[in-house]
Length: 373
Image (cartoon, rainbow, N blue to C red; front, side, top):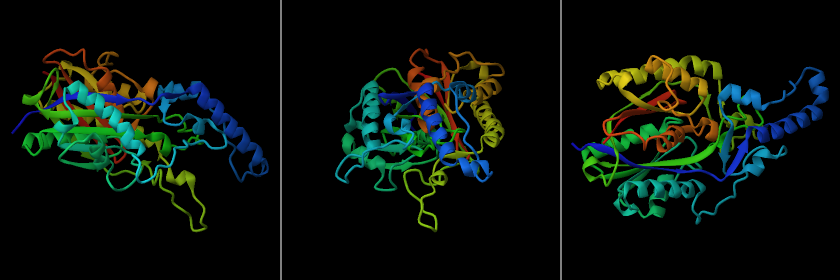
């Protein structure tokens, strides 16, 4: 049996940014237009008028201040309100693969590795641009990696589930060096015309390199333990996203195909699930929460993270103990906890322990206990 180590991480951040102020201007223009066009039906009580959004509402509900996206113009056009991504020919690299190459390159550089050293690529993400061929195999080809590759989707927990799969294969000796990459184009799965959720998501791609600890080229984290759990729920759902589902009359039901969640139910059910999961994981590994130097949590909502951190630590964690990147990136699904890890891990000293945790639709929750070597 070999000891897996996390030896590198990388983040691809789209250049385009949408602030809350910009998003509100676009949404309110759309809402005004909708209300004007449907004034008679609204007056008759057949259709509900759309209320305005505000920067204060968005920040209070989520802690988000801005988000990075692959296409800003389409999202902010009141006539469109979704990203307009160029259609790629079958002989061109996909957009997810392009994002992935950037993040993987940075992770490999930090690990002191080249693509030729990689014998496993896992593309673990919520939002895939096609069913097959696997995005991971395309990334493997474009990178020049060997071995094998496959896609994985466990919604917002995809990154930690991918890390567990890679770590297990390294432990067993079936692979030597793996890349787990998380290209998330969440903007293509969000209904930007829905006031309750139009601010939630952003786009990003993260990647981590895992290999045998004995092969590590520099500073790294030992993967002490991983744990995953799932419990079925429809309270967070995405029926199609990029795919199009038609009604019997041939029309596309846009709202039904996009991300939707029952927010109050999710808060009530997911928070205790995640808190108990982390606490049990630490207990089984003989780690006291007081000895945990850092929590890199899924960046879904500031209130959720604050609650989980307090339950796990027995007190409110400091910003250093539980860093948030939500305000700058918004919810980036599976990539969020890895963005936090990548940006806030280099300061830890040998022997310091931390826990990466992601959670979301499924329900699903995955945690990775690491120790600075």
